[in-house]
Length: 277
Image (cartoon, rainbow, N blue to C red; front, side):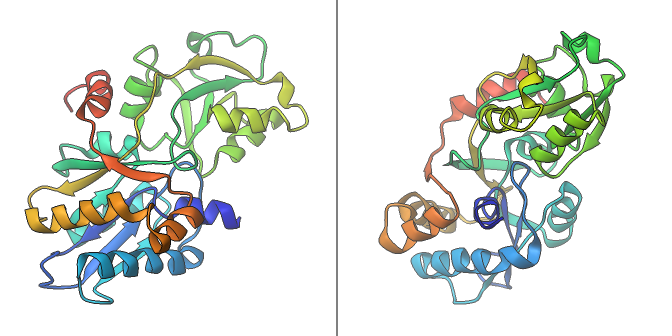
């Protein structure tokens, strides 16, 4: 649980209000890969924010935040708090890119926070293709982002509406549901699949479809609410963070790899599959 919590803290961060300090800065944090809970995550959220304040020169305690586990809670935070900055799971980024006027300017790389590839996994030997799954139960952490599931993860070979979807909070829940017969398929990345095969009965799990390469977590500005000076200062602090003694300790305990310059081609390749929505 401790590692899960640390790794979940920065999967998606939304900084709301004005970064010129006309008011407080609120942070909403969401993850789809790992999990965690609001109360337990709070000390680690606060530590990250205090680090950023010190490096960028923002007033101490001006940034506030909370870990939110569901898309519903993140959406509510965005709509009510009007964020200026975010670090978003790729699925949510592509689903809400136009609606929230998201402008990417950095990327977060991490072996623990990012799934570079996803697989549709089944147990029933009669299920050989995605077509065999039509009308059947698919448990996934991407049920709340159906267009991304359809166009990116499934590559257009099937639509999310072809299945009876159930949103789950952790990959292990999908594995257990599959092994018990409560669902017909789930979606796992390479590491999750390898772990699932070690569970009793897991040797029967099979991949029937795989996604193309998936992108890191984009760091984005919401529209033009973030000034160029604030964005440049924040980008400089984040790119250096994991290579410093104090920032590196925070990155390590949160399982953050590093913040890197934006590679438009990485997001562009996925955007082509996603479509202009």
